[in-house]
Structure formats: C-alpha cells, structure tokens
Amino acid sequence: MNIHEYQAKEILKKYGIQVPRGKVIFTPKEAEKAVWKVESDIAVVKAQIHAGGRGKAGGVKIAKSIDEVLMYTKELLGKRLVTHQTGSGGKEVKCLLIEEGCDIEKEYYMSFVLDREISRIVFIASEEGGTEIEQVAENAPDKILKEIIDPAIGLTPFQARRIAFGINIPDKVINEFVQLSLNLYRCFIEKDCIMAEINPLIMTMNEKLIALDAKLNFDANGLYRQEDIVAYRDLEEEDEKEIEASKYNLSYVSLNGTIGCMVNGAGLAMATMDIIKYYGGEPANFLDVGGGATEENVKAAFKIILSDKRVKGIFVNIFGGIMKCDVIAKGIVEAAKEVRVRVPVVVRLEGTNVLKGKEILNTSGLNIVAVNSMDHGAEKIVELVK
Image 1 (cartoon, rainbow, N blue to C red):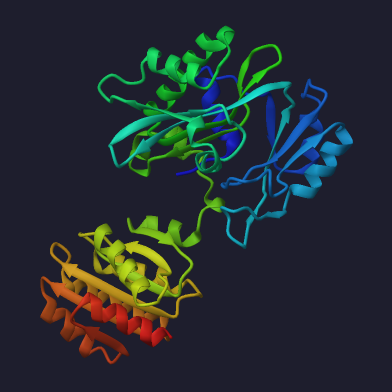
Image 2 (image 1 turned 90 degrees about the horizontal axis):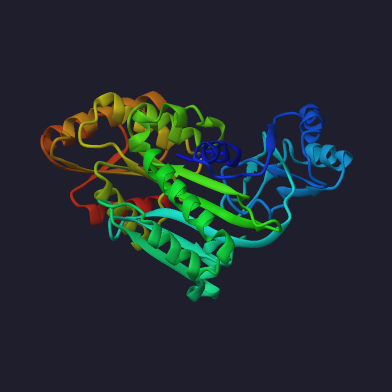
C-alpha cells in the first residue's frame, strides 16, 4: 500500500524526523491561506500523486511570491501528470503540498528496504541524493553503500555511523544522522513498511538534517494492525480493478497486455504469464484466485478480467488441489453467461474433480476451448487472440 508524500511526512514527524513546514491543499482558494504560513522567501508547490518522477514531469514548482503560488496551484490542480511510473494515461493531481523553501548545503539519499533474496532489511544510502537511486546504481555504483540488518538485533548505532562516514556526512551532524537513521528504522519496523525512503535528505546551511521528500510503502499483510495507516489509503490513486479484487481476497495486478489470466497459486500465475510471453502473447494481468476460492470468487475474478477493455482473450489455468476444478468451472460458466463473453476462452483444468469440471464446461453451450496442458493452452490462446 502506498501513501502520499504529505502523509509520509506526518508519520516521520511522529518519529522525531524533521521535515519542512507545509500544508496540503485541495482547492486554489486554500492556497492563499496556506502560503501565509510559509516563513521562507520561497515556497514549493508539489503535486501529490502515487508516482515518482514528479519534478521532471513539471509537478514541482518553486514560487517566489503569493501570486506565483496561486498561479501554480491553478495550473497543477486537475492536471494529469505523466511520469515514467504512471504510464501514458498519467494521474490526475487532486491535492498539492505547499512547503517552505530550504537553504540546501548538501543532498543525500537514504532508505530501508526489504531484500527478499536474503530475507533481510537493508539500509541503503548515497551522497548522490536528489536523483533516482537506479540512476546512481547505473552511473556511480561505488556511491551506494549498504548495511544488512540482523533481525535479532536491529539497526545498530555503529552501522548508522559507518554509513555516515561512507557518504561523507560532516562530523558536526554525524550524531544527528545516526539518531535519524535509528528513528527511520523504528518507523519501518513498527509500521510494517516494505520501504522507507528519504530522497533527498538535506543538510541546510545552518547544519540541520531535514527530510525534503519522503516515501513510505507498507506491507498489505500487516495492515490489519495498522489502522492509522489504513486511514491514509487513497482509493482514487489505485486501479479500480485491483480495489474490486481486494473485496474478494483476490491477488490482482493490472498489466498492459491483451490476454487475461486466471490462475490459482502465485507461482503458477507467474509461470503462466511467462509461457504466454514465450508464445508471443502479452498478459493483461496477474490474478491468483487462491487455494480456497468459492464459486462467487471465481465469478468475480472473471468479471474483473473482462472489465479490462484491452483483454482480447482469457486463459484459465487451474491445478486443483484444495481448489476443486468443478467449483472453478461453475464460476466460469456463470460469469460467462452473466457478462456475455465475446472473447475466446481457453481453460486448462487438472486435479481434484477435473472430470466434473470438464463436463460442466463441455455441456455449458459456451465457446470455451478445453486443453490438457499449460503449454498447449498458452499456445492456443495466443493463436486465437492473434
């Protein structure tokens, strides 16, 4: 789950991390009141969307007067901002963060991320702050420092200090940096984050460390114990199909292809997408109905796939263990009848009650192609879509 920058900064403040003074606004009328609270010579007007690259896309403006703040507010509110993370459709700007400007002496990058390959949280930092860490990794990999954190101990002060020396934090603010790092790590753990990033972390002319921009991502599996984080959820920033899927406990991620996939099991779903690409097709989604899905869940999954206008065909790939093939078949038939499917559907069923499932499909009167293997199914759906 993602949240906006202004929300991330509200959380960081609770953990003793200094951020610029600012106020979020939703209408141009609110901008004038907000700017009077800015005590610096300049104000920064920042679009609030769930995507990086806002500055390059014109979503961050430097204003030197109240008139300029109002001008940029009117320009940005309602605008569709297109960045490298939004896709060509962009995201509509519905709120802005107006902040005080800062006298920047130096910019740094720091983050805590979950490294799934080693099952550890990693502290990543660089003295090349203000740019995307991927660019730093490509152009100057020696500028990126990492500390792997022992989960039994947590981040230790000596690790934070070693990072500080490595990214050339001035001696006068090393202790402040160490404490800030410990606070950000505590936020990461206590709020069930999968990423906590400050970019840039700035040192001001009067040697203060301030989180100029911040990004927090949260593990959806931990949200049941994070009511304050759930309250930050902005459904308008999320894909409608993904929101609908969450109501039925379906794991759904929208992609850009033309072949809808309905599979049970995340590993099988990934393999299904790979084999579709192998035969020259492009998956339109990742959709795992899980092992305990009901007929209602399957019907909902089918409808969600078909709600994507780009879908030109559907591949259902089910290996029935806990999930019974006849339940899948009933859900497919009911959904297909309800939404009047006009695209080819290829179904591969194997496992528990497979004969019952195939009988339900074969006697449905629908134009469904049943296959006996995943390989044949992928090849067939790509052929039918083309």
